[in-house]
Amino acid sequence: MTAFKAYACPAIVAAVVAVCVYCLSGADFPVWYRDNLRRDVFYAFIILSGLLFYVTTYIVVTMREEFSDPEYAHMVNGIRSDLGKSPETTSALLAPLKRLSRLLTTTVVVCLATALVNATLGFVPHPLSVAVCLGVAAGSVVFIVVAVVLSHANLCFHEPGLLHDHY
Image (cartoon, rainbow, N blue to C red):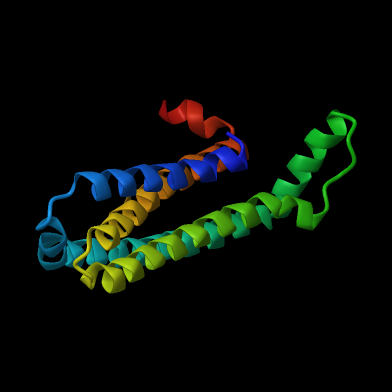
């Protein structure tokens, strides 16, 4: 899955959900959303962003220790020399970790932004504001799923036996 396709999925889902909510919601739905659902969506994304921040920190610190291990560098450079390639530099060895860190940090920011949108725009009892709130929430959920899939792929690439051990 290319980067464009991976990041386009949440945007497409957000747009579809927003259009559906805007077109299909009744006159009393915005008031019901403001009074009953807005608070729960806000709390859910605040809690989720805290959890993802903790997971991001734990994964990055743990993997940084593994990537910094001289045995790992020796193993990678041994495989590369067997393939006739030049040895990796330290920054090249840390590149997958930097990509994973950026992805997980972006996920935390998306969750916080979703909570902020629901906390502010969710007060407006208008079908368009409710559509935007629910569209952003749906897009965020899809973005989290994409991030989990990409993180799992990154970990399986880092640890080739991981996929076969669990599935």
